[in-house]
View (cartoon, helix red, strand yellow):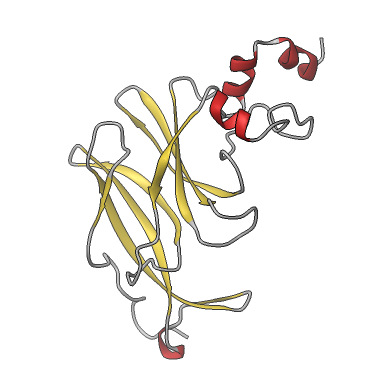
Length: 180
């Protein structure tokens, strides 16, 4: 039996779980779960655009994967960190967005790449925040963007890693030495 036929033969909820959707998400996006070009064993966001996975972590018997996502459009843009959880790395359940840009903060224009660690028993996210900056403070010039990158930290506030508290100041506010 071909993989696609096998998956179609599975119950709707099982197929949806394999592609990282729940029934409510599937109803809001008819046809998406059965799209023959949609990867079947690959974590995907509920919709729109996804970039690199960040901060995979094992915590309290579950795998958590965070990933860059633009929840507003199906293209690169206002980067957030999406969050999914699994007990077997095949069936994923999406959780609320873990990190969002903070208006006026050092990540006001996006929450970029990073990682997750357990630091002194507390799940901790270390990530790059970006914001528009004056020319002399820019560290990233890409596709018309002129942004300053800073290294930021957030700590979990609950056992399910749904609520995060961002440190108010960057861990690394600027690159060391003279940046070209």
